Length: 219
Ligand SMILES: C[S@@+](CC[C@H](N)C(=O)[O-])C[C@H]1O[C@@H](n2cnc3c(N)ncnc32)[C@H](O)[C@@H]1O
Image (tube, rainbow, N blue to C red):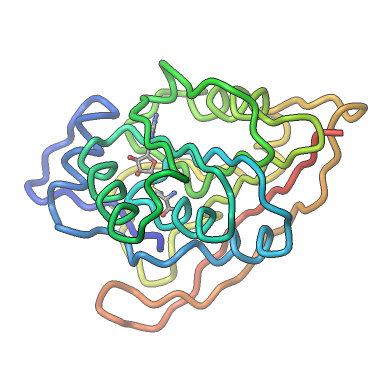
């Protein structure tokens, strides 16, 4: 359910919240409503517990987790996206299982420890240098002992994106791991992989994309 980031009017909003509010305001529904394939691949076999979804967007991953018995806290900077997510969860009778929280994760962060902390494509064109690294470090701190940190990101733009709209650096898994600087005595990397996926463009044009995936367990 990834997409490139377009601006309707060509302007460049400056702050994280302005950028993402403009992104969601452009369309009534931005994402497909389906959970991310790599979340499903990694977590379908994991016994449910508490989960934190960072950059939850319109809520498809959080809803999928809740449907599988997870108690979910889901955070995003966009109130527009959260309102859509909340409405969909309500429609599905999942309001009790998901707490939706608005945060600019560079500034505030959901409290608590979680059996799963997931960050799916937490890329943000307006983010300052090092911001994503700080957010992911904070994400690691939120993992309960025995729990999982799952970080999925683009390795590159999908094949059908000829001119990437804005500069975004997509870190390699090695870069993400270096940024996290996790103590191997406390953390075990279970999956460190680059995955090629079929990925159709917005007009249905066939294509591929490459994603990075890290699944790290806190001992
Ligand atoms: C590329 S989208 C990915 C959305 C979703 N996780 C998915 O996989 O489809 C990034 C999402 O993260 C949110 N986001 C980006 N930076 C953020 C920040 N600093 N704090 C909270 N949310 C942020 C955006 O609003 C957006 O919904």
